[in-house]
Image 1 (tube, helix red, strand yellow):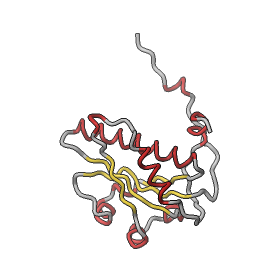
Image 2 (cartoon, helix red, strand yellow):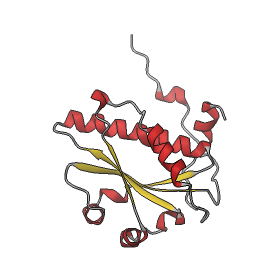
Image 3 (cartoon, one colour):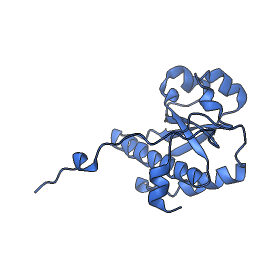
Length: 161
């Protein structure tokens, strides 16, 4: 699949099949995703795989769509607001890389912001040096939603003289 089709066809998945993802494949996507741009080569992302016991404690309203794999992606906060912002941008690029690699193999992702709450950070054992950018469910989609209408790009562009 060409990159344009891959990007435009990717969806957030809310319901997954029970079929597990091959762990070696998952790890290879994470490794490749780490080629994301990151200022000063800080590689600020950390991955926390979430097992069934921790997953039950999270008590997510849809259980991450029953995804067979659940993990959190963390971003190192850094010492300055500028570094924090740069890291968050880099981690977002890492996540997009991962999601596109997974999608190219027929695997979708669900992205939850559940990790921003203090109780969830505690459950995940996240230190103060990290932010939880998202908790992700990953697996083979049971259903793929239609694309949502997007704003025309012309409405998002400004030209300066």
